[in-house]
Length: 91
Image (tube, rainbow, N blue to C red; front, top):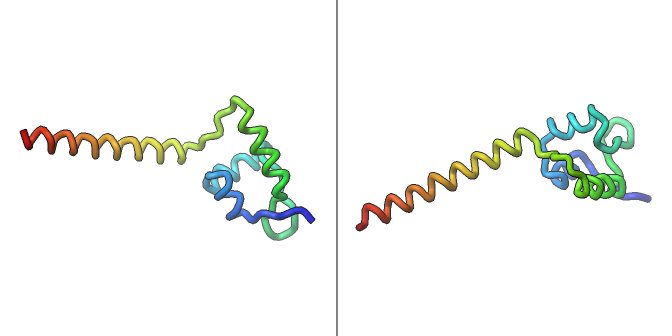
C-alpha cells in the first residue's frame, strides 16, 4: 500500500500555507487528493509533482512567502544598521 500524507504533512513538505495549496488545487496544478472525507495525498504522486516543479521554470513562490522573505530581509537590514551605528558611536 502506498503511503498517504495528510494536509498537515503536505503543507510542511511543500513549505506553503493552505491558501497557496488551495489555489494550486483549484487551478489544477497540484495532484488530486485521494480518499473521502479527509484530504490525503499519495506520497509517490507528491514526490513526482515536486520533481516536475524543480525542473520547471515556473515560480511557485506564494505572495505570503515573498512577504515573509521581505520582512526577514528588512529585519536583517535594521539589525545591521544598529550594529554599524553602535560601532560609529564607539569611535
